[in-house]
Image (cartoon, rainbow, N blue to C red):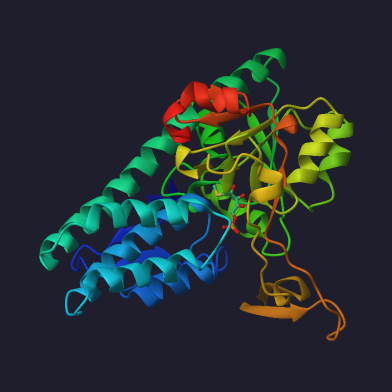
Length: 369
Ligand code: MRU
């Protein structure tokens, strides 16, 4: 996807230095397009924890490159495999809900543990990280190709009137490498000339909708309107939403979907108004070791100051302002879980399926092994 008309990925290896991984610093978008350098495993962990990068698929790819940097750091260590296990724990501990993180770290560990030669280790980890990145691009593209068919069907019924799609948080290309998950069908619809309009939930407290989704849709010239988090239900009651598409940070084997806090309430409102509610799901986000998502998916609790303060641009500078009494305590869960019964379908890279064990098994039987 594009920033200022130039095609970009969210993460890349510096063209002159293979040991330098670079990302867009998402903490300052849309006000500043800064690049953040990742040279060490500590910097990779910092980038994930502090949300320099965020979004389950991008977190996974960053962790994969983090393991590669770990191999570079491991080459002078007496016990390289022990050191790599410690790096894996450090990366895994940064954010507990997005399962792509541990998925990517384990993929690297499995490939690396038998290799003795340090240079060979580095090469295998580098190739693996590049492969995970490339696979993510292909997966997002396929989610778009399948998902656009749903938008086209709605468009036909609306006889060419714009299809109004509501989305929560940011599950666009900034949450992945390219295309996005929830937004990929939208970008494909735009490419195919299907008229669309997107309702963008601001997504308090970190405002991924206002800061990131609005930014990336704008850069792609997709028609959109920012709404506060409480508006969706009202729009749905008045026929102003044709479908909802969200992403996911972890989907359990029974089809329950963990996504940014507030997603569940949108699903309830969609259900009450007979509005289809879809989830863009890359298989790297499936966790079939959990069969009851509501009960067992770990939910990240973040710093209370993310709720108490809001960040924005004031007089040309990015500033934080306190929005409640200083002493007020705040609670900040990052995610909630939408039960499978409220989900119309999962749009995956292998097709669309029901949000249920049966549905997921029909496309990804190997995930239950
Ligand atoms: O806390 P974040 O910004 O990493 O959370 C991301 C989300 O919850 C997104 O909605 C997304 O759907 C998951 S990543 C495609």
